Image 1 (cartoon, rainbow, N blue to C red):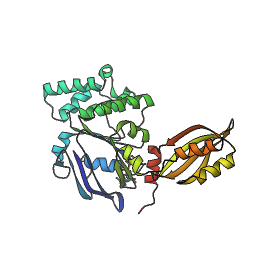
Image 2: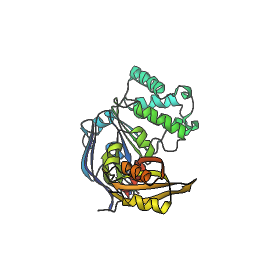
Image 3: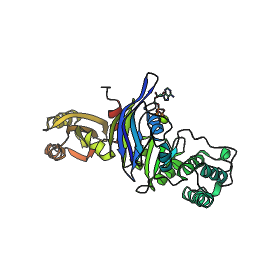
Image 4: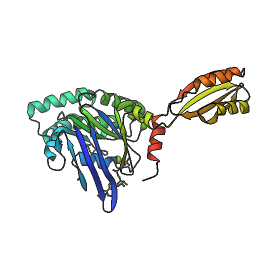
Length: 313
Ligand SMILES: Nc1ncnc2c1ncn2[C@@H]1O[C@H](COP(=O)(O)OP(=O)(O)OP(=O)(O)O)[C@@H](O)[C@H]1O
Ligand SMILES: [Mg+2]
């Protein structure tokens, strides 16, 4: 549904994105994740036909962003990073105005305006001036204008920025509700948002696409070791020595100091090595007590930092 191939954008001599290629399937929700300045908005603006790439090509719903921008715009709803709405217009008037700009005729326009008002729960603010709306409602109006012509693809640049946690959660719910019907590419620098909303995550840093996969696959692929957390009651130095001596163990860290006689250790082993049975056996063999034993998953935040903090090739 969205295809990008070798996208590169230079601003003067500065390379904002470099050889970015990816594809997003129909009905998929993909998160474009990256720190400030990574090139997220640059990528998105190329797909939305706002900016031309220096080299490379892209298509949306089968139409080239370079040579068929009108056809792309018909299939695409775009919500920019900085939404410029008309503060002196009422919400319903504004949406009607946008509908006209998008070429929707009288009846179709009235139908779509009331549908998006319903879908985005804007019913209570239709007669409110946009300038007096809360941030959350303004974002919804931004999404409403993007969705007005019923596009099959939505590209949203940091749609939840500036929202309070409750508003952001509602917004994510809205997006999740589109899964399977619309194709959504959204950018964010909020990690948990990706996990909560997206089927796949694309990590962009310093203009380079570093990864594109499901959050689960990324977790699995980037994990070169397994970690187990063990809470053990026993003499700390001896416990550490014992854990170290177990087959497959690379590293033992004391992760929290003794608390009522129990110390927490993090044990690192090779990726496919499950050291839990040998920990149970060894600890009970010494007559110490094991209070908790679990494997520790690397979360998306750790993955992100590992990918992004890798030195540049
Ligand atoms: N018009 C421009 N002229 C020169 N440099 C630009 C221009 N637009 C963006 N850049 C630079 O290109 C890089 C990528 O910018 P971009 O806006 O795509 O990043 P981003 O990932 O969207 O960041 P943010 O999270 O801050 O929105 C940045 O270093 C930015 O300063
Ligand atoms: Mg941006």
